[in-house]
Image (cartoon, rainbow, N blue to C red):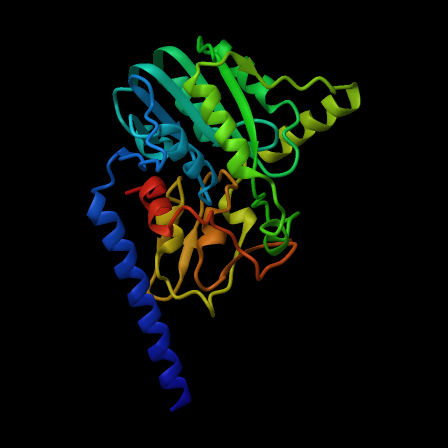
Amino acid sequence: MEQKESMSRRDALKTMGAIVTTAALSTTGLSAFAAPAKKEDGRTAPGNRLIFYFTATGNSLYVARELAGEGGRLFSIPQIIKEERLDFEADEIGFVFPDYAASAPLMVREFVNKAHFKAKYIFSVITFGNFAANVADWWDEFCKAKGLENQYINTLLMVDNYLPVFDMNEQVKIDKKIPDNLAAIVDDIHGHKQFIAHFEQMDERMQGFLKRLQENHFPMEAERLLRLNTETCIACGTCAAVCPHGNFRMTDTHAEFSGSCEYCLACVHACPQKALTLERERNPQARFRNENVSLRDIKEANHQK
């Protein structure tokens, strides 16, 4: 009797998860961009502003929305990169993404490699959780090598979602002054400020450390990084819906995964059962999603058909 009730609850959870995922994705039709959130103060983006973002737990999506104002359009990089034609022209073009090993996620790099951009004002905001190092300089040089000139690059300190090092319960308690710092960046960009957040403290030891960090971070494979508890997994499909690479497949009882991985940890943070974990975590019971972003938002941004 106890076993039958347990299975019934498992099946119910699985069904609920599948319904929520399907509803979220079918409602939007997985459009490449979402309407920007309206701002209470009534400010609008000057002219035509396009913002391309990559998000895992919502930090960069939240920032992208704030930068879009009422006049901007948001494009999820995992969605728009699938389009055949990647030529963009606007008054303003922006990029928002997280700092991965003092560089950009591979998908962001691939997008810039493939696409062509033309704008009077190009800006980038890179979110980070602990130490930004020279990521702004790195991005500036990377873009210039692709013929893309940024007029503004800044970094924004936010909650660090890197589970092997940080406890999410402790991270969310830290006052990182996100609203004030973000408001200043929004004002900078509205005013077309010319600025690159240069990092001056780069001795040989630091340069060597950052180089090793970047070399060891990429490339990665999902099957090497992730651990799945098949007893707690209910095959709800949440991991598949939030993965920007489409690495997950559902069986009748659990998820399976393989393929090139950004190590964004969207799947681990979003799993409602905490069935997905890493070999080493600071606090396996603590997970994070930006309070201004819903799980549905992340599914719409990242889901791969």
